[in-house]
Length: 272
Length: 306
Image (cartoon, each protein chain N blue to C red):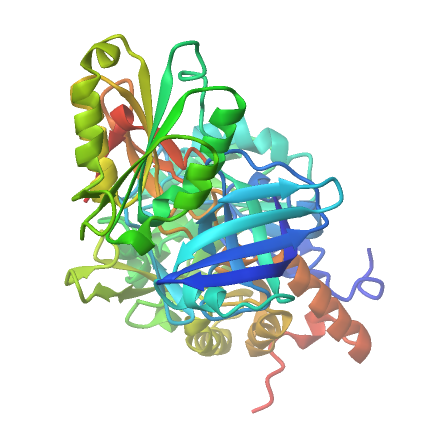
């Protein structure tokens, strides 16, 4: 983890989203599922940085490029949208614990990635990693409409099967992404019983909660990458907690930024 | 180090600080979290997260909401408990050259005394800051901080239990912060720090729910700074014990406002979240100001021209 001023090399806009690429001389690695805290250099309004999943990480030995895909939601993300190539960005990264792929990196198992909207941005590094490790991987990608299918082309380029769902039916299954997931699990009930699948999900909380429920019913191990409002991103404000069930049955509040952002779904206590 | 070689050196509550910059309780963890960013020995000191007799789980999320030039929080004093602090954090903190001020929290006077008793047996705590002003717990915080008599009682009890300096952190939500400051001075406090957060509220207009689960939260950040400066000025007129200014400090100029208003030290809070190295930048800015003007921080305290 370190704080670096990086330079914007590209900032593309589409729909209500932005795709930001920043470059720094600093050489480092980003683990799948890790994130950054970003704000334009010197910005005082809004005061706090915004937490963004690291979408892609490219290092050539001399410099590192990191990409983020964000939804323009409020003043913080609007400030990011206004960044131009050459502008400076304060980046605190890489933050959080990476995904643990050991349960799925076992011969014969398969990873099921389930993403909603911009949540897929937190799963692309994971998909790359799983491909690199030779783990069979498929993606269930949902969005309100075709434009909300974030990163679709990049996932397809990895060569993994993608099951698409849009709420308005403009592409793929018409409905929620959880429906193709349920159908897949039902169609492959024998493999499900043998523990072939491990699920990884990121997206809106109601979607992740539904995925957690489906996986629990089917006895499929599932991990969720949570999003929570953060002030610092490195553990001191204790503002971004999630309810986690402990061994003694009690609920503890753990920091999404340090103990997370990835948690086992069967340990999460979903708070509305 | 003499004052002439170090214009930032200052004495507060009987402790010599190499500079007046002290990250505020609750925004600096247990100090160790900032080691990836800078050498914490460069700080005058820091205030720990509020320590209670037993670990506290804190409030359910969401706990924070950003607001104009600031933020609301209702963390609920989630902390490891004083014993875990002594066993796990304090041994590592002893390796660094800065004053560790233990922020002490309790639901009752006995709780305050229990925390202090545990810390008295440990090595490495320079002094105490009594948190009688947390607005984000259902009991125990402001019931002391809003009432001069009760604030005096807890101060007096802790003073009897320790020879170390006792700083009392004041609530801006009290009917009269000046009255509480006078009361704790009378009860033997060595210094006061002010201000804690202002009780505030923010509402999501789509769900019509409060934006934090506790409904109300403490407002901090630059939004509160002018009110905090005014309160430090008023308290400085009313008490002789040193004041430590807190409230939305993000730059060296912000820090100097508090010092000129009457504060001997300053605490930096919310700004640590936006920039983990902000305290170092404030120290550097204060040093440049002092050297360029051939003045020391000690000479600047309370020099407002009115």
